[in-house]
Image (cartoon, rainbow, N blue to C red; front, side, top):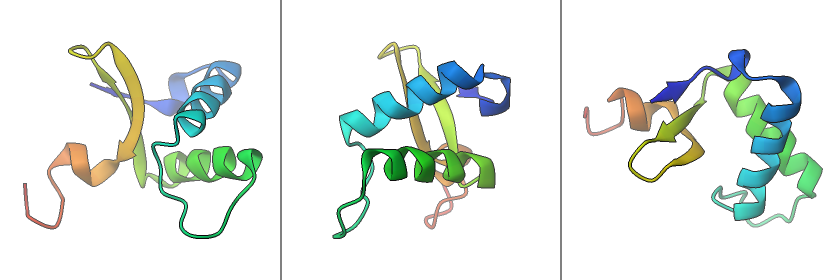
Length: 78
């Protein structure tokens, strides 16, 4: 289920982004970035529409994923 980031309280959104960065589920390339920069980049991906927040009922978890991976617009057309 996609959760619109605009409907999440700012403090909750910030806590969620920090939690996701701490899990290191996102590839930031070879250059080491500060924690704050990683959080801001993740927020920017949400604001730009590149990524979405998803809730998995099966795993009872929340994550940020590429929009294409949940909308079926990926390179393989699925």
